[in-house]
Amino acid sequence: MIVVCGEALIDVVHNGDGTQRATPGGGPFNTARALARLGVPTAFLGHLSDDKVGRELAQLLVSDGASLELATIGNEKTTIAVADVDPEGLAEYQFLVEGTSAPHLTPEMVPARLAPNVKALHLGTLGMVLEPMASTLTDLVHREHDGRVVMLDLNIRLGLIPDDEFGAAMLAWLYTHDALKPDLRLEQADLKSALDYACLAAAITCSRPGADPPWKGEMPALRS
View 1 (cartoon, rainbow, N blue to C red):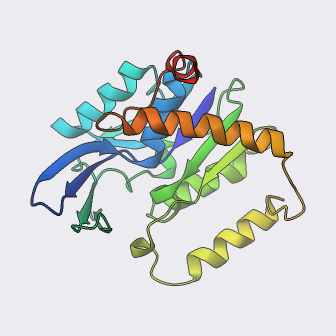
View 2 (spheres, rainbow, N blue to C red):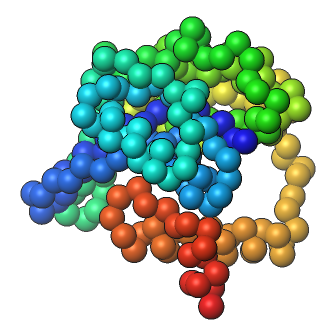
């Protein structure tokens, strides 16, 4: 099983033409859905709201096959990310996080030990900068990384990082966990295969609205 840790939220996009749309989002939320759709046993570890939107996010995870056995639910409002897109398609981001659900993941909400069938942890994005979620997940990885693959998504909006403290801490963390490997190289054939697969998945996702990544069965059809 892969445990995906972090935020589930709502993306509110203000388009340059004056229209607005709201879609489910959050890097870990999307990752958990994608893995589950591809048939990978997946559990989402994060804090969800019990408001209407939070219940919808939870239902989307369950519908795609992700487990919520490690998730918690509280009465905070669902976290919101706002993207203002100009007529040229460039976006500026704001995050409504104060007192909301996603950051409110505390150590007491995380199991003391993960089950032996957990083979990998995936975390990153807002989960690495919003407290107390960031400290909770860092402690979890320190405690549970032995014998498991740890995947870290560093796609973090600059507006959430006030200074260089986060970058310095992240580099130190990567060094401590032997994750900085400047001499490691992929074979060209392996790199091309991974990029081809990623492009296919992205092409399908971009062809339809919302966080709607492809099912495993859709990939061969596009290849042909």
